[in-house]
Image 1 (cartoon, rainbow, N blue to C red):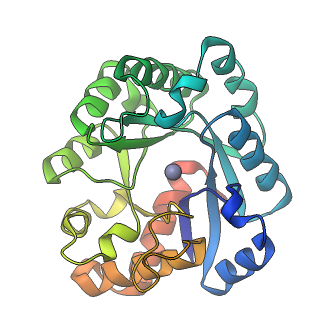
Image 2: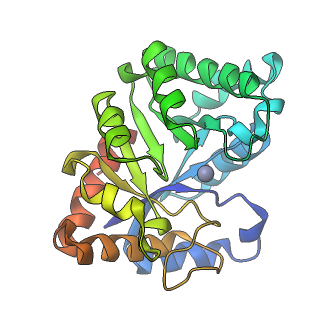
Image 3: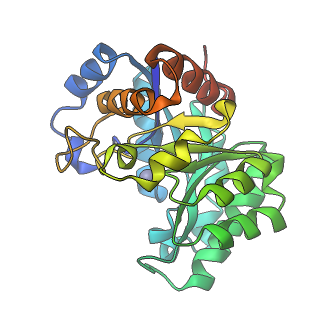
Length: 255
Ligand SMILES: [Zn+2]
């Protein structure tokens, strides 16, 4: 079995064929999916989907791109969502200095609130970090994020940053990017300790080869596992087994 530890099934790209998509996921061996919220609306939609589909779980939080929506009154609504059955993580949250969707201070303020909330509620974090790895790790360290750990999703940092994330009790998530030609992320993924590696799609974005450029979906996480196995991460079956066990432990999913 495989787990897609990072999907956005409530995005409009999936409104036409969600049921067929879940059938395809099962057929590809993808038995559990973490459906990741990016603001209040999408978090609510992610939870609703998890409550009606037994292979789907949810998270709730504000993506750094949505930090402008993460004002005090919106953030106050998060604990109720996080307490819902089927919600397994806080996020996605973090920092994106590549696109600078929102002023850095605004992103950092929201990120810190998510970390504190995760610690209070004893839930793992799902972290988006782009061109901001050092700052993300500094803030996690300062706020005591290692108490709960979580997933550094679609990890794009270097080997030293990967080691630091592991030391801070984080798992590293890898998706379609490892299948791209001359992938730096693939080299980093091959060096991650076996008990800290998890797989994801980040669908509808970043479809792996041979679906690159198309809409991504959970079934394609299989291509990521195949790529890692081919590159020397171990036999395909053991990549599946280990990454599934890691995601289940991290998010407290039924095994
Ligand atoms: Zn995402």
